[in-house]
Image 1 (cartoon, one colour):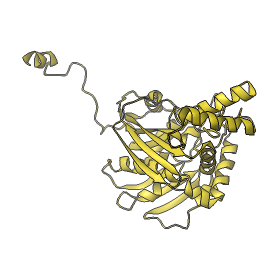
Image 2 (cartoon, rainbow, N blue to C red):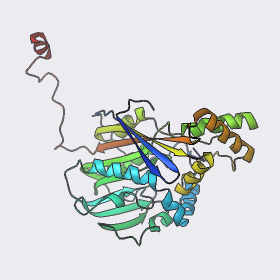
Image 3 (cartoon, rainbow, N blue to C red):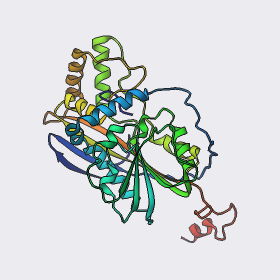
Length: 344
């Protein structure tokens, strides 16, 4: 949940990509867990007990970002890359889907990486009509339907969908457990859910710099960074929603910017500005200048650029079905592990 401007696993690989004035570094961290707990999903949406985000403001921000088509397309680099990784996980499922739902599709990042061998039709769903329409004239390899959908109140019937994808959208949902329950209800038995969202350490460089600058210039800290889900909680959230055979892994993407100002501008062009209800209406100029200096001093690279870390949480869950593999009953083993170990 990135706000105004906004982990710790071992690295398996890293590589660099140059994108105009930004240097992007990718690091992958993998740790999968299998959760087999089953939670009964309610047939109705449970109202959120605490509203963190102003969804109307977020819709306006996304509409504004999409209207500036040139800048909007220039900052697609992050969501396009994560969409590619989601589609890569989709390819692990050896099925050809009739209809795939892209929840929180934005301007269309997943559609860039799919073809008719994977699916016949993709339904792009987003709260922002302007984002859905930005690239509507660009021909896709599959049939595309565009729907204005609120992620907190899904319009799909129960047991109606084969698979739901979501790319960097759910971090702006107030009731994440409720949204996951609705997704689970919409899926057919043995249907899959593949999603990505920003993790808790996203943009920690910007967060700490703003906090220190505000503390020094204004004598206090305001909520510039929204709360984000911790990777350790994702498995429990999926299990609570009724998913089984869940897998969670994380990626770390570091983008180097010339300064904090280019970073904030890119976040704005992505539609990822602050939408917390208790936010301050503006950020003072001297505070922002101080934050820029602090960021370069604490986190700056030798070449003068500043890094921005994006922690990406990937999740896969399945709706329970009798055809799925299940653990053996307790006590049904015919070979003792103790005997095998003693022989060695």
